[in-house]
Length: 429
Image 1 (cartoon, rainbow, N blue to C red):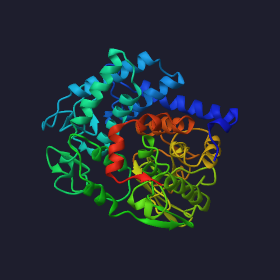
Image 2: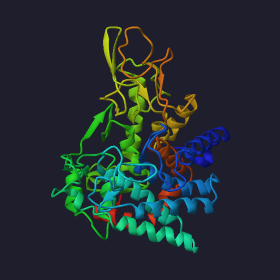
Image 3: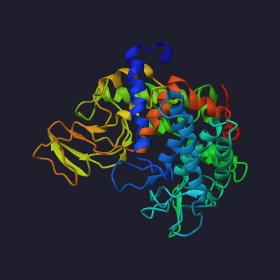
Image 4: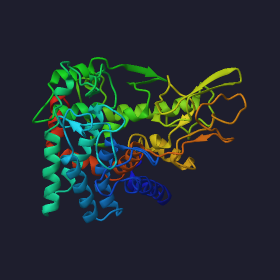
């Protein structure tokens, strides 16, 4: 596989410009007073705490790439951490969080709970991954950088991961003051791998190893298109935890039994996605060798149409997947970009093929047979009018991990993450 050093100038420029453009989201859609990051580009969007975690991860990259000065990045990180630390943590429905966890969405100005949303275990984990990245990167002797490390550690240590098990083995998806814990727990392969590692590694409120065993208990190893791998349909599942952890050459119990690791597994998942797009069993417009990237993303809206005798259903924001769906023809180019470290030989020509990085659907057109609800198709298909922080972040970070391994190398020094890997029984292959 190619690496950054072997790329031609055009490919390097393509990736650098894409990385720079995606990082601008965290400048343009941040509240400069408190560091909160908008979920998406609508004027009334609340903050997404996952997007805040990605911003905190992206600031070190911005320093290295010259997108921000170190002084400015330090100021942004400090402002963000101070605001999060000062936010109300209580059972009040108007608090920012409870037991160290944060609500999925916060008001961009006050930092209080928005939309009656849940206290989110996974989104808090993404936030904490960003907080720990900042702690590991900003190791200077100045009082400001020392302040980053101190605040980051206190924010992480107060998260009561064990409470979020809700008297179960596996970690619960979330909690609300109105209804208590959600019914569902994270079992089976998903983006929550980073959640388990951070919860296992906690020196204050760790979950037991039996929690990780419960997580592994419903894994499904499958053969698809002749490829054996741990299946999950949406690409983001195969990418998210890899932003912070370099899984090359380390294996847990499940992967040891299959002589694989999570990095190689994500490579196989990426190759299956391209193979699915080439086969295009649903006959969706545009799919092919250089047009793939099926994941959780925005969509044209709930609608139905009949085309060539086939009834098609379209969706709003949902977790699309391949090869078993749901798949309504919506392609998210950022999902291909975030697979760059796994399969650069197919990602680079795919990115060169896209004429824009917006989520799009070439099948959703203005055919008169279309029954639409709340979305306007176009003759050439539908393109999302929105950008999302949790889409821009993986683009910035995974390009950098391919380019220099900056986030991976920073987090290798994180004692908390290393303890989590040990408690999950990861060992070198």
